[in-house]
Image (cartoon, rainbow, N blue to C red; front, top):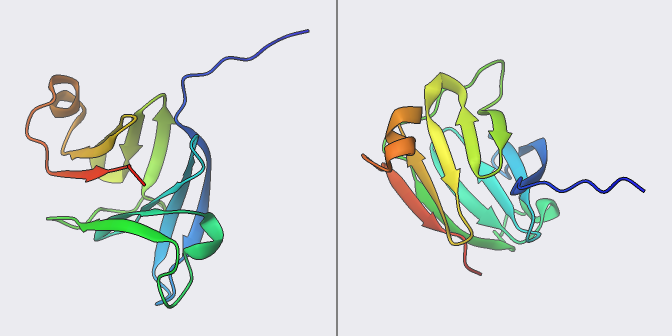
Length: 123
């Protein structure tokens, strides 16, 4: 029997639409919640199905981004490994068990300097 161990905090990434029609990337986290990455905000939802709810049911929290994210071929999230998330345009998200942090570059993320946004993952 071959066992696969992984340190990835993201189990699946899908392309979704918000109730207003805005395209977003939805990253399913290992705790069952969904991190939604849009051009102008990050959000945390209880389930992927609740992302398009016009009443916002399932939204745990959201945070506006100081500068819009760029998309690469319609996607914001281009790579992920463990708690590292590479975004289009070179920006980086670091996901820990408690928070998600946005940095402008890999170097800033590596040094934990110049954090642009932080959002709690507690629910």
